[in-house]
Length: 499
Image (cartoon, rainbow, N blue to C red; front, side, top):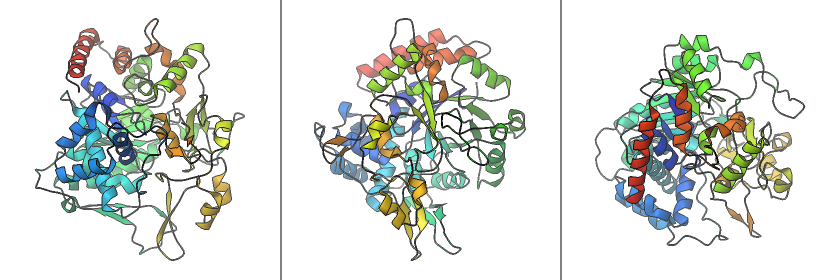
């Protein structure tokens, strides 16, 4: 088995790949991954729900800067939880130069998620970030490293500048990261900066540098990462267009099939043999969630596979139980369906949406929702006529978007991905008029195959069920039955002590 784990559990955000799921996968000997997307808001809303089980309080008590942790607790914790129909407290939107309050929330929230995922076992845990959400990158990575994260995994962009950030933070040195600003001119200050010294309450020993895995979708990007990154790239995750979430757009002019989905061709295929020549381990992702596909990946020279959708519906994931239940019922009935929507995401990237009643996958559910951008994670930074940096989102009100030099055609069909993903995990915002944000569930094309993880008569499955089924693809076959029994015993013990 690779030192990284043959199976990487996908980092599905927001909050689907939570600490409970990642802990279960890592404890079983593979690479559990927490989603690093929007953890500032995730922590703030969990605290406003009263921190059921006291897990957040336990992690905050372990944070190395107690005054900072206490500020977060005092600002957001609500004893017993807020009333269901009371809106969550809003927090500042991310910008190039974040206010201290928001930077601290990013640091602490990333620490908390990684810390909880590492409890109860000695195996590494990873964290997954989207390069498109650049304004959170620097404080978030530092918080994850304070918690001892073992792997930083990043996609949805070309993260060439991440390795140097990891190197700097091992010694608590300042790091920089360039913000992509549409229309920026030479000489404009687009560099984000974060210095750990400005936030430290005490001196800390050196941190261990996590390994860095870049998620890419083509041979060209693989070569670019390895040749042009400003530091060591430890491996690659090769994600195809069948994976859930955002997909890379087809190369060339966008064309749609009769169902309205993007058409991918030979130019979008990845040459596995050429990947083997690059000299770094790689994992195949997108449709590799089966024992047969794992066996196939290993035979082609891959170190293993990354699996997302199967784990998204596991008991431990953060996806709402009602959504898991309905999706699995559809899988069993043979009616599960996934649509690659070329318009939904304000990023302009295709976004996979699982068909599910009562969610934003149904146009009638979304038609009455007013256009609003109150979370802003997918906003685009742009240069204003005055030379400042502004922010716009193709899902915000049309008049506001046009006032920011946006174009009307860019707003057609857009949906608020941010609010939809929070609704998916039971943290939906309450809007004026007692309206609640609808969910927008994403899944990969292999959603239809998930019945393979269900035991006879069962209506759900665990992360260990997924691992046991996938490990049939390992050669030689590992004796997982004894390992499973040990894991279940350890989980019962942790539950008994409230972990």
